Image 1: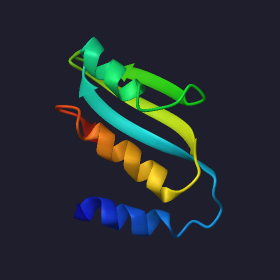
Image 2: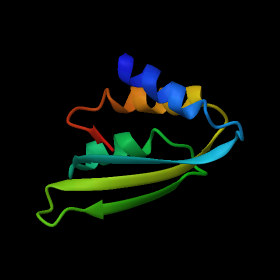
Image 3: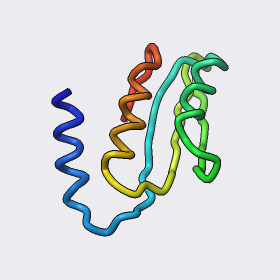
Image 4: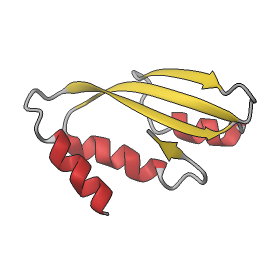
Length: 88
């Protein structure tokens, strides 16, 4: 996908790997969807959740150490398989 190619080029500007990368997603406030997003990250990740004012959506922010741009792209590719997810 073009979006991943462009992201990879931007990420490869960084030469100081590993780095802590921050992911942000919005998903419907459904336990299954939240669990699927959180499962994208390892146990060392720091994960925050924030419910929307209406309670219909949850914002998930995860910070995890990444060794290279391919690891970041891999997480985004898996995330896009989750129905109704929005990546920020």
